[in-house]
Image (cartoon, rainbow, N blue to C red; front, side):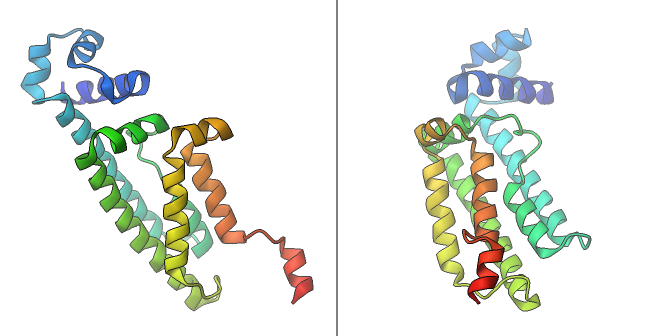
Length: 191
């Protein structure tokens, strides 16, 4: 029953954001609110459980990517930046924005996970520098650029105005970071 509640809660979140009610969820499931409360103490606990599982899955996926010897450094970097949890794969960007705004304790856990992500990213970049795949860079600058961009992506109006999703923006940003603005042919000619 708990898994069913979580799946339907995700659907509610996709339709109504995090402002869905336990009444909405009970109606969707065709059960009483009592059944919901026998499994979870509150809507906040349901959302926290969903995020906890999603963050654990992200960590596991990142570790698999980092340890995959079939991938080169660039591919690892691209994949690690684009990884999304299966449970929340269909989650709209609005949900992340709402959690940031209305559930600061839960968002803190997301930010803590982002710190782990940055440790992985820095490790990949340093490995790329050692192997000659990447040129040496001042990592704090990369981190600040990405953090600033992520902050801007959390602005729902930005996403709507540019008709892109957070996932698409991360892919575009990763491409620019990896390959820069200057075409390779132009860089070779200027050298």
